[in-house]
Image (cartoon, rainbow over all chains, first blue to last red; front, side, top):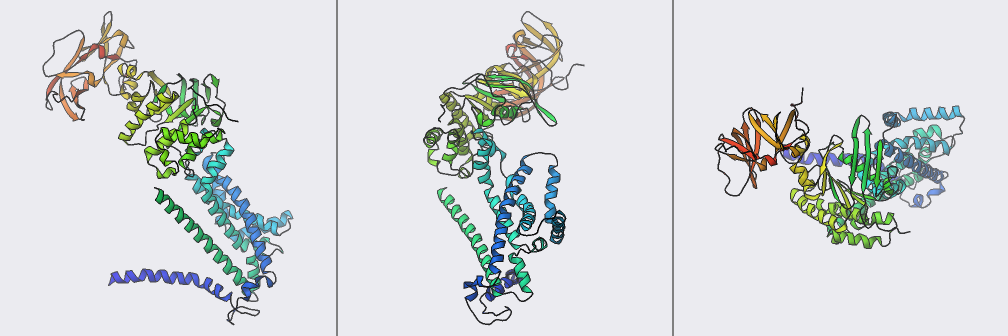
Length: 266
Length: 374
């Protein structure tokens, strides 16, 4: 009796958890096809209109584009800086190394409200005009920690002898980095970049404190929610979700193909 | 711009090398010359400074003091990629994101040498792995990876090839095979090999010259036969094979021999095989040079005899029997008897005398731990 209970309870629990997790996404997706009027709360019939004319609603696409731009720029800077810091922290012994390690954890541990408010007052004191620039600065700051942590794990698992072998085989330090270190760290670096893009694209709290008049997608949805979120927001939300799923699947399939090819050769 | 391959090996000279790391001194004061074309082994226990020496030659570490010369050129200040030296790393360090062929061609490509892939293929042929050229390193066995690492270094025709415990990760059988192969390749290419190892059999088997290293210093250097036949310090006597050591005051000297008194036994050693001729000295002999007798042998001037002792332990190792014999007031003595199918039948606890030729004795410069002079 107990055996059968265990046999059914676990899958049931798993299914329920997934339903619980996926319902909001499912709801968002379904209502992106709603033939809504001003608000998108009641089902009024199926239409492709919102998907086809997503940019016709004022401000949606501009906010979306802004978020993409901010995400890309922040990711590039945070990834480049974070990778360099991660390599330095693992490979070199320098003064204040452990303090740097600790300080890098702080932005992850500090509540976003505090970070956002703190930055806002700092920008105010320095007299910096709030806008896209201040958002990017804020995003680079909090993405940096995540990049360092992700890449550091990869650097730590990299045998230093590989770089030494490169130096031994007539490669100067720059060539060693680009031909050996970088390709071997690439999986970690790309994971860090994806993570920091997702964090930046998604961020509302810190952004809201430091945006000024600049509109990002999360801010747009938040503002619109006061009047009822337009279906166009559902369209963009669903599209981003689908894109993320496609990226994950593509990486998985690509990895599987490589593994099979290797197995075949061996 | 294609650079010419170096056709021959070059001399390596280390002059007054000292290397300090934060908190300890790895190498105290090292002078070493490795003649061109020689297979040279640095032998020592872990932590003796042998790998540091190798890394200094490769340029992966900089000496605190001293000079490194390769073929009369001072390379002390140059970077690893500027030195005509290649290394076979202990972990092989094959680039996991490149094929075997690209791994081997890496050094050639860096130096912009013509036809890197063709030359890499030749090198893979030499180590009999050309059929695996398109594989990735992680698909190869340890022995195969080891050969690729060797090919990757040798293809550059360095003046000097450094080998850092290259056979350490292989199993015994494969290690013996690779030893033979490595030696054959060294003779074929005629390069200078500097081989670091803690395996004394490996060092004696392959090297023309062995330098025994201990605590950042070279204890003794020479041909393997000479080192084994006539160790000069306790460390060398114990590290290179096994030795029985007896300690006593010099009791008499003749024209060509020195005798010590050990618990009433007179042990002689030829003067030219002893480092010290007076005071308290240690005399040693190898277990395979000794024989034991169930009756006391008649005293002869060219033979040392001790005993009687009691057989404590007999170990069968296949090629030989190893006997541990306890001699009162003198300690435990090991005797090897080759397994000829007619080795003397002897029981545990039996009383025996041990003898060996005076010419097989050696007198050491220092004393075993616990026998220091007051």
